[in-house]
Length: 482
Ligand SMILES: *Cc1c(COP(=O)(O)O)cnc(C)c1O
Image 1 (cartoon, helix red, strand yellow):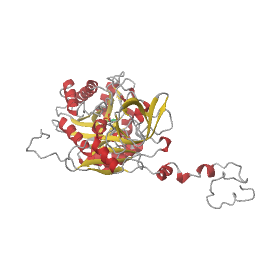
Image 2: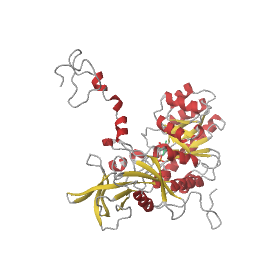
Image 3: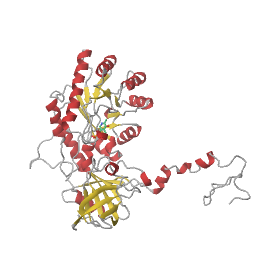
Image 4: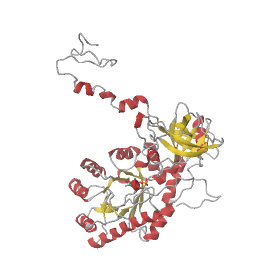
């Protein structure tokens, strides 16, 4: 397992750490961010590997553990493949993420399908592949009953909502009284119905809870998981055998967006669980985890060019290329999702100019497209580069297509030896405008004209001025055609 390094141990195989400032400087030198590439995302490969190592070390005492990565936190095939190579499994929530996980090379038995809206087809596919599945509710269990072949290799579980309450961000709190997720355990009769559901189905062997996400304090998460563990004990006592053999603890370790410290740590998470429920990690249950944000957030950043600056109502505004298309949550909920912004010059070195209170705005055509309001930063100017820190999860990997802005390129970075040159590898190229048009129905460009003629049949149809004709069409050509 992981031991403390000393002079005799070789350096970790992950290569030296690369500070963000060095990565930014080399990215600018390499033209990955600059005039021709106004916004891009970056993933710290060594940082990702180190985060996985920290997670494994924190659960080092649990004999049977499967750490899955919540694909939605960074749904990029090369990143998923990196995580697979580090020994992770993958948590997916629908056919797209399932496809990404398979393409990334995760074995089906190391994939967990969680979603509150699985269709019969999706359930059938998971069962055929041997992907583990956590039913969200008792009706979904009925569907599994109908679709499951007796020899299906899928590990099957049920998601419960321990209803222990929410954290500071309502939209991120999954264990509230009215949450849409899982079986609400404290509702009248629910616990009994869950126990009976297990008693009737010997193949149902897992309990799942994902208590919350950013904004949920560790004691709240621990309390929710303790309730889940006690339910497993109750089910096993009632059925008189160890039917529930594993607990899927979900993810949700919050991330510190305020500075560079990783806090809380995975070790603190494990300690918080055992403080509340000492038997939870004692090895009698196999353990599955589903962390997303805490594995990737601090291992990525967005860099974007400042296109213009202006003054408006006595406030300086920097118009950059990073807005709601890549920092959607921050733009719409700035108080819940504040981001640190770094200011760099056109050469990619940190700016030393005097500071000024400024808005850092994005390129989208709506007034609220601002990633940092009234922020004290070195005075920004045209051609500078701003860095949005801690955006490795749920930011550049999950862009929003507003204004048909292209999905930014994503690059991984690392360094072979300490002080050596930072090198990049493309994770996802920037979307081209041709791709945007194709994905916006180009192949169906005429669909609304040909299917819904403007005039009654037999009358002359007019193409709008300036629209090129798509080949000869006898009814269209004729006298009077413009
Ligand atoms: C989103 C999600 C996760 C990951 O949450 P993080 O806060 O990113 O760790 C894990 N499990 C389920 C079911 C989820 O919906």
